[in-house]
Structure formats: C-alpha cells, structure tokens
Amino acid sequence: MTVQLTDNRRVIYRRPDALQDKSTHYCPGCGHGIVHRLVAELFDEMKLTGRTIGVGSVGCSVFAYEYFKTDFVESPHGRAPAVATGVRRVQPDKFVFTYQGDGDLAAIGTAEIVHAAARGENITAIFVNNGIYGMTGGQMAPTTLLGQKTTSSPLGRDPVLAGYPVPITEMLALVPGTAYAARGSVATPQLVGRAKSLLKRAFELQEAKAGFTIVEILSNCPVGWGMTAPASMEHVEKDVIGTYPLGVLVDRAKAGPESK
Amino acid sequence: MSAMATTQLAPKRVLMKGNEAMAEAAIQAGCDAYFGYPITPQAEILELMARRMPEEGRVFIQAESELGAINMALGAAATGARVLVSSSSPGISLMAEGMSYMAGSEVPMVLINVMRGGPGLGSIGPSQSDYFQAVKGHGHGDYKVPVLAPASIAEAVALMADAFELAERYRTPVIVLADGTLGQAMEPVSPAYRDPARLQTDWNLTSTNGEREPRVVRSLHLRPEELQEHNTHLQAKFAQIAEREVRFATERIEDADIVIVAYGTAARIARTAMERGRSKGLRIGIFRPITLWPFPTAELVAATEGKRGILTVELSSGQMVEDVRLAIEGRLPVHFLGRQGGVLPSPNEVLEACRKMVAP
Ligand SMILES: Cc1ncc(C[n+]2csc(CCOP(=O)(O)OP(=O)(O)O)c2C)c(N)n1
Image 1 (tube, protein in one colour):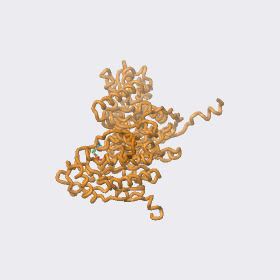
Image 2 (cartoon, chains in turn purple, blue):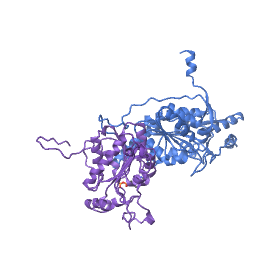
Image 3 (cartoon, protein in one colour):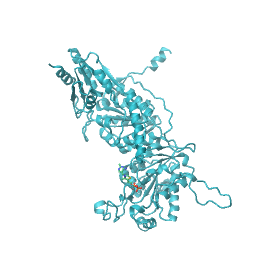
Image 4 (cartoon, each protein chain N blue to C red):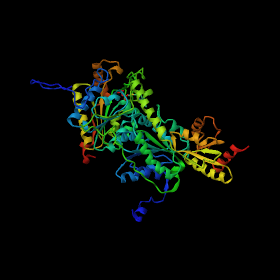
C-alpha cells in the first residue's frame, strides 16, 4: 500500500518494495517477519530484487515465496544449499540466497550446507535459529539449549541422551570456502539494526563473488517455547546468546591475503 | 552438396563405451549442467563430464552425495537449464526424494540409471532390478516419469536427445534406464547426435529484472482442493504422455509362435536365442519395450494375438513381467526367465525355456 502524503509529514516507516503487500502466516511475535523485513530492506537499498532468485526451505518459512517479490524455488527439507548451488552455477550473475531454519540447516541439511561452504558457492544462507522445530510442533532441534523442554525432550534436553547444541555457524566459519560467517539476533531493536549490517556485509560479499556467506539470526518461537512474545525475546537476549555468542565469526575478505 | 561435404557430415563409426557414449551424447544434445557422485558401474559418465563440460564452458559439479546432486539438478533445471544427472541403483534410491519434488514442481531433467544388482549394496554386476523403482515410482506421491530403455549403445546415444526433448516438452524428469552391461560394453557406433530445439518457456526462474511478476517453482499446495487440482493436472499430462509417447520395437513377430518380451541387455540375449531357435525351426519373435513407462500395453496385446505364449526375460526376479501379465490379462500363457545379481542368462537357456513352451 502506498501512502500519499500531501503536507510536510515525512515517511519514517513503510513496507519495503521487495515485500508483497500481504499479511504473513507467521505467529504473532515471531521473528521471521523481522528477518524478512531486513532482507527486503537490503534488497531495496542494494537494488537486488530484480536480480534475485530465492531458495526456500521446509520449516515455518516454507511460504517465504509468498512474501518476497523475487523468483523463488522450493527445496526438499535441508537441501536448499544444493538447490541454490544449482541455480547460481547456471545463473552466475544472479543474487541467490537460501532462507533456512535450524532443523533444516543444522540437522537434515548438514551435508548440503557444509559442502556448499566448502565449495565456496557464491550464495548467502540466511539461517534463522529459533532452537526448535517450529513447524512440526516444537520438537527438539540440534540447536536446542541444554535443559530446554520441547515436545520431544519433555524433561529438558539431556546431553547424555540427546547430545549438545550444534554451533554450526562456527563449524562453517572454519571452512576456507566460507567468505563470511556471522551471528546476529532480532531480540532487541539495537540487535535488529546490527543484524541488518551483518546481512548487508554478506550480500555485498556475494555480489563481489567472494565465496560462501552465512548469517545466523537468533530468533524466537513464542508458541513453541510456551512464552509470550516479549518473554521469548528476553529469553533470547538473556539465555540463548550465552550458548551462541553474537558477532562476526569470520570475514576472510576483510582479513586480506597477507593475514592468511 | 558436394561429395566431399557429404563424407564430412556422415557420422564416423567409432568404438565407444556405453557410459561415455551417453555422456557425450548429452553434451552434444546441449546439456548445460551435470551433477553426479561416483558409483560403479557408471563412474565413466562422471569422469567424462568432469573433463568435457568445463571444456565446453558448461557446469560440472561432483556433489557431496546423490542427495546433493539431484538437488543441484533441481535448482539448475528450475532456471530452465538442460540438466543431466547420473547414478546407479543405490544412488537412485537417494535421489528418490528429489525426483518426487521435480515431478511435483514439473521441472524437466534427465537422469541416467546404470543399474546394478540389489537390494542394498548388492553387487556391481549388470542388473535390471530397478524396473519397479523406475516405472512404479522412486519417491512419494502420485506420479510417473517417462522411462527410456536402450538396448544398444547407438540407441542410447539417440535416446539421450529424445530424453531431453521429452523432459522439456512435458516438464518432467525422464529416466534413461540402462544396465551395467550397456554402461561398460564397447560397441562400434556412428553416433547420431542431436541438439533438440529449445522451447519457449514462461515458468522458469531467471529473476524478474523488474519486468514481470515473480515466478515460483514449487510442489507445495497446502489446500487439499488446490493439491487435488494440481494432481488432476499432472494425471492429465501423464495420460497424454501415455497416449503419445509409447515406443517399442519388434523383430520377426509376424510368423512367430513364441514372443519373447525383453528390454535392454536382456533383449540382446533374447535376439541371439531367437536366431538360434529360428535356425532349428523354432519360430521365435521379439517384442522389445523402449518406453518402460508408458508401457506398450495395447501394442503388446496386438503383437501377440494368436501366439502360443510369451516368455519374459529379465535380469531380475520378475518385475516387468507384472506389466506384461497386466497387459495380456490371461489371454496367453506368460512365462518368465530371470537371473539376478549380475548373472546373465545364456542364449541357450532362453532357447531352452522357449522350447519347453511348445513341447507337447
Ligand atoms: C524429509 C522430511 N522430513 C521431515 C519433514 C517434516 N518437517 C517439516 S518442517 C520440519 C522442521 C523445521 O524446523 P526448522 O528448520 O527449525 O524451522 P522452523 O519451522 O523452526 O522455522 C520438519 C522436521 C519434512 N517436511 N521432510
């Protein structure tokens, strides 16, 4: 919806052009909407929309193609990095991103993400970590915190039975094909701004064909976690960040060849 | 045209290994991208592509697994590129998920399966034990894909171009089903390469360039009515393929008493048996399905009318024979001869089975 302003009022907030004028299917308070917005703002600012082919995943964001004004291809659960590889290799001048949850990227799709990074594919993985399998009803994910109760870890995640949270982005940062790996969050307004700058750097490096880029965004799942939306964001800030520290994990383009 | 030009244009007769011939035929058919993972007995396809695709300025990736390969294919093919993937039986099992997605989202792609013995890791010997997998469904959901079964290396070369053409015309994955013998054997061929014309498309992902509405390639239709409608559309397409694209070959069928039904390498063995039988007065003919789906049902019925019986020969425990029996509906006795695990029946064994059928 375009708002026409006749007097000297100034537009300070509006729907990015890269997003369709639709209300989303996301639960109230879910972080996916914020991440969509950040991505779309960058598409506008970097004029990427017309050159972008999005690669969806299976999870709560499966309908992302309904919201972005870009071409989009669906992937089987976990396979988005392979699908994106195929897209990008035959369309080398496009901007290609995957949008994946933590079950999708860090469990069933581990092989695909590791090898897309290893090959240094010029794609950006937007990795939304809510520590849970949201879409299937809140089961334990590889990223679930120790002690966290989910529908499949009803007594809390016990490392003896279910292992430890997987720091997949740190793991990916080790791979030389990864040009950039960073972790941000949308838990507070300040962090939202910071997350956008991380995404921007990743997008710029893809444009520079620097290699594989990934930005993990710590997000929430108020419904799956059984919390109100504000409480869930507070939980991310107070507890989740402790297990998954924020920051740039690797920026090989910045490091420069001499520091290798 | 001068005589000189004619000689230059005539395809040279060369000795080619089946796997390499299929790979080169795909390149000559304009294949834009190839994705694969090593597995015997088809590794030569991957190896030839590794060398030739970059030479041609095209895309080659050795994927991290067959899951990786088939999904790279999905992504590349979703942009409208002409894409080939190859593997052998265990790898095809891993590709089943991707095949289902491609069938559902109507993405054209050609997949070569150079079959080996199963189940499980099985053997690396030639086999036809993936007929069910290819014809009755690899992945989940209500779908079929055309399955082309060459019986010689020259035919395999010709079918590669046809496979891309079918895939693009019907927006569907297509399987070229070969067996280890066809993949590994060498035969003299005059390769009849063909690069099928590209169709105008309005579905593939090329990015909007700000000039059109976004396109989505997907198989997800969450509303039951919408998914039913999509399935109805797919079924109508499958019916059209079944009506138009049946292929088969017959040999000496007119005066035959016994008809051998066989495809691929089994049909080659059957042919030797037929020749030996004929020289001894046993009138054998051959019906060879080239499309395993769509199966030449009506054609088989017509070709076998009034015959004494049918012998189905397969390098399996009996898979295609089920479709033969479904076609024949008890009109004739349908016998079966099969060998498994990489063992080939000898022509004499086939001949013996034919002889028993006419013994008083
Ligand atoms: C092969 C396969 N296995 C399982 C599923 C079921 N499934 C759908 S979404 C999902 C989990 C998604 O969780 P995540 O990636 O964390 O994303 P979220 O829903 O939390 O955003 C699963 C297991 C599937 N669709 N396909």
